[in-house]
Image 1 (tube, rainbow, N blue to C red):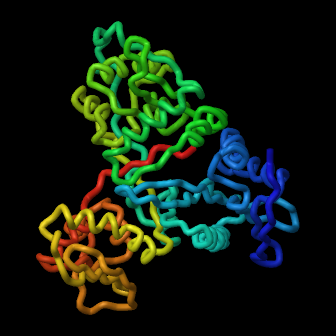
Image 2 (cartoon, rainbow, N blue to C red):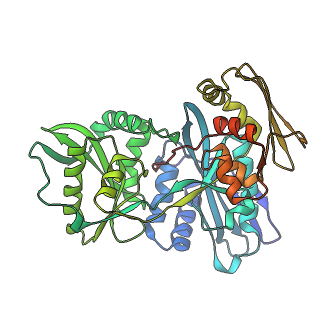
Image 3 (tube, rainbow, N blue to C red):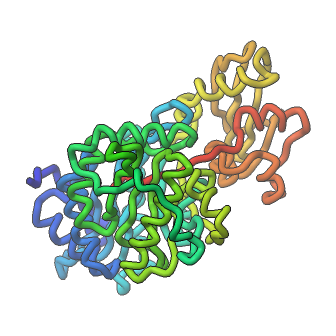
Length: 422
């Protein structure tokens, strides 16, 4: 059931007004608009299911611009909340999703106007990060930088999977709502070797197994059974890029279970006239490594684009992470100031005997430990690249030898991945 909310109205010009979804009629209009812009009726269902049934979303974060003369929606986007965790620290992230503008209204700054309100929502909600799956380059103008792997993965031709590999004790069945506590436990365990990942509680699992099955992100969730007892799970997406069968998620499983899983998904692929299996999972995951050993080709990856709304707050929130990293290094008893110069702004870390006493922000810092441009800093904080790797790409990354050592301890290369929130 739709719960009406307060309407926010903001005039863009004499003809255009920015609003949020406030009524069920607004939701239905926006759902139809999104389906039209993105060319699939599944986006209509996705819009409605997210607003009505997703445990973290609400209509007030679904924004659109209306032509007051025609009454038509001409541009829209939304904020979808995510609960993330980075090395044990809980983070709140707001995805910018389902962005689109009618062709006749493009290049008029409408997404920029929507982004202003979107950034206000990030600030009002105390969000630590914002992310988007968006088109190349466009979102850099709004402060987003590529900093986490997205999509891609490995493609395994069906002929490489041997039909004689199997075990009579291993079988599969689709998961049901009663399996959610078990799925949540398997998911939690599978994400322990990922530095930054989505926290998925039982309410999110209920959404994935229920309302999400009518949307563009629907997937079958299969339990892996040993002598009829569950030992793990995997998910097969109904839709996605490419022409292969997409395994979009998998829990920790033994080698023998993974081998039979590939044989089973080969059969699913053949039944669906798919020529290969695509693994949209972390490259280090056991199933990905098995696929590589069988001759899978690396299809490359795209990347999530990330924005940090309040850098100082985020860095201070990560102080326990920084201290833990130092404690496992030769800087466990370090005392001094580590200053990061972003050319227009700087952040100074005051450290005493390995403990982070403070992190302060200033407009400049001439006596810096490392210097780098803003977009490189986003990658550094999230562990997408180390300071030395960034130096190879950006000539304006600067540091001396000793500073690079502590920078590598504070900001190491991380293995991160987002499984779906919806």
